[in-house]
Image (cartoon, rainbow, N blue to C red):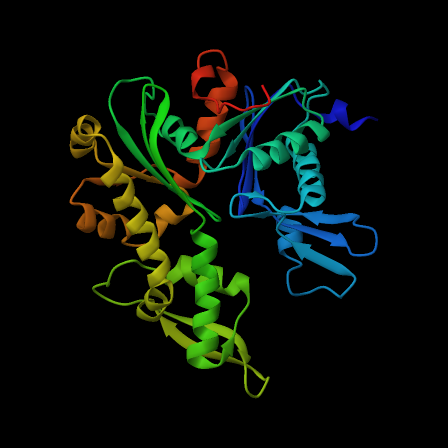
Length: 341
């Protein structure tokens, strides 16, 4: 059976550095899995993707490699990314119709070369038409904003590989800042902190758990403690230590400052007329990073603007991309332009 026949009619993809989400037209979110692939080193044959591949991290032999084929929000390994998309689409779809259209969300700062890589990957996976939408635009639509209005809205989407900050009005991004500093940078900072401060080695999955459990952007009334298992860097012997939210906050401090500085930089570039709207409407946080304890409070302090965390911030992008694929004619103005079309 040809792979083309495994594809559903129209789908929306949030192809993220950390997670991939797929929306099927008429059905909603059909898949939400880590953007990670396990493959045979000798022949590049894909062994597992998503949750199955993540469960293999740190537990495989040297003949199996486990990677994230996306880095900083864009495709870093074309062949593996294409194979991952094929596998995810197979998982998500049950229809036997060929895919006509795929709408994919990408960072607003993406280059033409990176756009082409995303389009080519989708086409090789069987799509007949591929459209791209900027992540902050998709987030705005996903949280229920009317992006066609003549008022300014600020979206801060903090994903795994990038933080996307944009002022949106009249179906267009008027000003935007896209920085390749986000959740992954926080995770890496936690790993480095424990190695440098405690001579203690932990893996990426452990660092992720620490970030989600006790990570914070501001001092807490009562700091949270958590036990961490890893390996002593000097003796090489496995052991466990106690850490707390104050230590983790110190570890991710620089990353948080970079994100807040980028928000301030965007506001500084915003036209005065739209700045007046933002004063009333505030800033909306989306993406997994929006769930970091106290991040909204910190941005509120630094900007003196209202800051709101979107409902279900992790799925805002795919919900917005899904709305676009369901109503493509109505939302054609929000799609990214390209030299190719």
